[in-house]
Image (cartoon, rainbow, N blue to C red):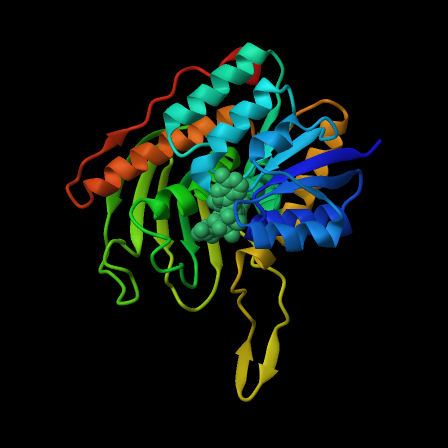
Length: 338
Ligand SMILES: NC(=O)c1ccc[n+]([C@@H]2O[C@H](COP(=O)([O-])OP(=O)(O)OC[C@H]3O[C@@H](n4cnc5c(N)ncnc54)[C@H](O)[C@@H]3O)[C@@H](O)[C@H]2O)c1
Ligand SMILES: O[C@H]1[C@H](O)[C@@H](O)[C@H](O)[C@@H](O)[C@H]1O
């Protein structure tokens, strides 16, 4: 059986997912697309022979669409995920699940009321081989119990005018918020924020770089650096300090060169390349699970947890350098998501 997929939002990542479903993965076909950018959606639809719809809701309602992928702008996600649940259709939603914790909670409530899991959130780092190896190292106690995590999320640059305010947290650090909770099998209890000296490349309305200090239930301290105008590359670092050793996230594979009196390796500059394999595995597993009527990837509850944590990080960022420690509290995870 082929899963007939409708894609809402054919921008950067929408096109990436359409390309992988059409050319690399098996078991699914993109049959319907929609974007508010008419020229762009026309070009995408022509390449894959998909039908163009007027709105996201028309795609969700279409009889020949079995499952939905939401890759439109973040603020539109909640509406499309809720509509997919109301139509009883499986939905893969890129991060963020919704732009507020309340929005994520509405999705969680709607899914529970529906009675069957339908929602998966695009936290693709859980599918990345290097993070999986790091998790295996921790789970197998090869460094004893984890005590401290140092991590960095560095982008070479961000689009001027489109990236501002709380985005270092809600658009960028949200990946660490999800993956570290998964990596450490732990939940967060508090956060504070510190602003280092600002880079000359940061826009006026952006604190860049930014540091957040999270504490987990087990007492692990996480020191997170978010630096979105680092200029030199797309660099994701994670080091876990344990009782008996230190484990580092493996670097992406790259040729070690000796040339012009230098020993060097290239650094990637683009998230698409850094996580290309992870995205492939993530979407292939989503297709396979959806065909079986299952959801096994990051759930709406994970999306909600990330949003609650992100809200606390934003509150800490707004009070940065004051020493304010913002508590992070979540209700018990409902049985539905266990
Ligand atoms: N998992 C990841 O690493 C990752 C990477 C990139 C982007 N994302 C997420 O994916 C989403 C899209 O990001 P992007 O980089 O592709 O952005 P983008 O701006 O390139 O694409 C978004 C598209 O959504 C369209 N759109 C906006 N409102 C719409 C609506 N109401 N109906 C239909 N289409 C609409 C826009 O016209 C645009 O083409 C964001 O939420 C982003 O955070 C996740
Ligand atoms: O900071 C960016 C992240 O590094 C990417 O992985 C994407 O999530 C992108 O949307 C963010 O803007």
